[in-house]
Length: 364
Image 1 (spheres, rainbow, N blue to C red):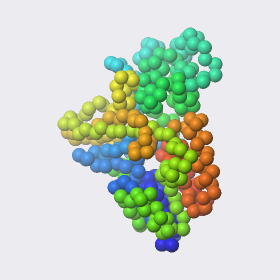
Image 2 (spheres, rainbow, N blue to C red):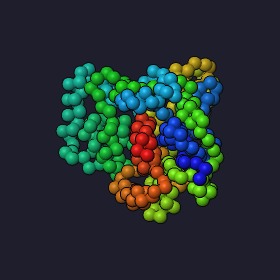
Image 3 (spheres, rainbow, N blue to C red):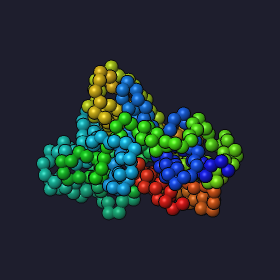
Image 4 (cartoon, one colour):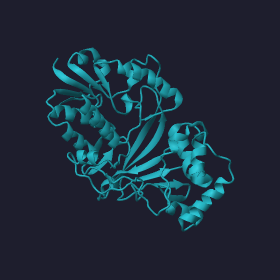
């Protein structure tokens, strides 16, 4: 065996694991089917702007161990995520907070906002929410649901909110303060110079092979290493023998514009169902960029198929039950470790990816 570990995927999970194994003297080969490292957090410099090629990624955590860990590889700026929601010709602050409630109802105090939500809830009979629609209405009332949640959710998931499980919306931040910071975490920011250079530092001294599709060379690659860390889709690894796990995909339309500032904010969500994209990202605002040009990306939710990139696991009962079958196979596999969003069929924020990868590397 030429390597101790073959690491399939150079995203955050694979890079952290590879870095930790390399530190312990293990010989690693990292492969990726894409022509670049860093997975979905890949950033590319265009016109002096770090472009988030696979959607906006804002690092945030309350885990001091994880924060210290990433600061080994990058200096983070003071970016604070404060997205805007646009509904028809109206603009609202996200997360839902006192600025949102004042714009909607003209209220000034938390008591007045809570009273408005209570009044709206009295008009519906919801005790135990059975789906996303009922859960959202119970959280914020019908006005906010209709304007800022319903259409966006239907676009994002390709299903009506009443067909989606309630848990999807439970993480929605609702605040009765004038605070536009989307996250409650202690630490937040974006690596100065983008995420790609952060992953490059993690992979320093480690052999990396790009444009290398694991499944086209599986037999040969498997023979090179004692162990395999696999961060691709777990159902694909087992040749979909129980069926395909479902995801939502995304597609992106990026434009370079001859203007200094297109929308005044890094992220603007479009909540009407009739507008096909869910948000427009203006990349220069992630790093407080200057210059005469700007770059925007429209993000379109997309129906997933095995030929497309898998972004969001659909963790409903049917898919979770299917994943359990694949997980049983994985537990009996002594050579392969499954990790990351696709390997575990679970949506992770970036700090959770790092924490889980560190835990896994410490175990073995």
